[in-house]
Length: 95
Image 1 (tube, rainbow, N blue to C red):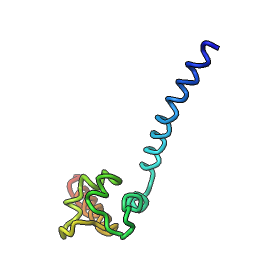
Image 2: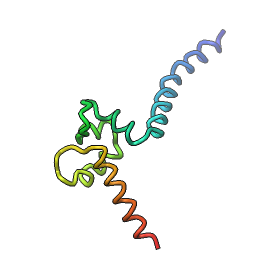
Image 3: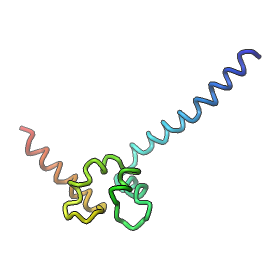
Image 4: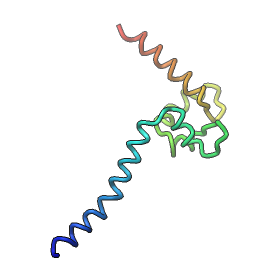
């Protein structure tokens, strides 16, 4: 009985950590479209910098480069165009 209570306490403390790790892992395996939809909380097809910062951090880091027209938001098409440009630039730099 002495060991049961600490064991149960440890299990209860570990459960939220495991759940957060599983959630983070699921986000890594989402497609670009799924991540965009999750971050676009207004569901208008326009991802603002604030939305990207809170829901799509990899895009937030490159937001200014993706928002070529300086509209203040980006679309899925903008992200695809950015990735395509980055692939071309990468392949040009590889000997």
